[in-house]
Length: 181
Image 1 (cartoon, one colour):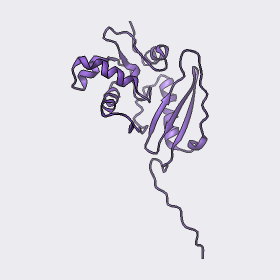
Image 2 (cartoon, rainbow, N blue to C red; image 1 turned 180 degrees about the horizontal axis):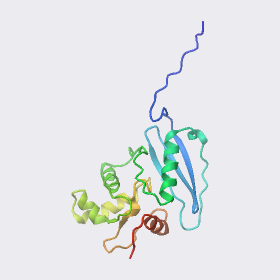
Image 3 (cartoon, rainbow, N blue to C red; image 1 turned 180 degrees about the vertical axis):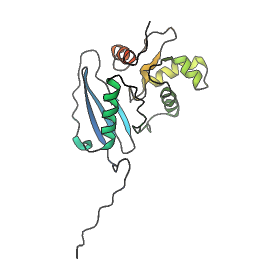
Image 4 (cartoon, rainbow, N blue to C red; image 1 turned 120 degrees about the vertical axis):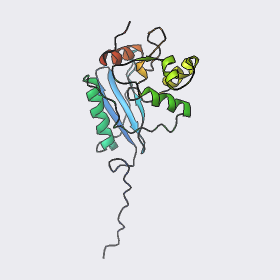
């Protein structure tokens, strides 16, 4: 009689309840992502200042469906195909309530569209004067592209702030067909 206990499997997402890491190779350098058991909590782009961080990532997520879905979504996105990243689960537990509200509303601005920080504040039923607070919350976004903070411009239509640099922001907007002044 076999007395070896049967392991308990707690399916989470595609049967995975472990953290996973991720690397997507882009012409500007590697894009890294990290998943908790709940979802994607960080996605970093290489900075346009020429520095390329090489980060060791475990291949623990090699058979994790979340990693493959994010990889496919990024491949579609950078191929110029409309991608909403709706199939990628997110973990925004470390965000404040206000940040989550800003990031949720930002995700409603679809591919090929842009808005201003003030317009985003109004969409959230905040006064337009909350534009600075909205911009700050977007600046704290740990999941660039998936939470499309690059789609937000200054009131005059100019590019402002992007953690990976304004060249990335310009490239992402152009990829989506947004005309810049």
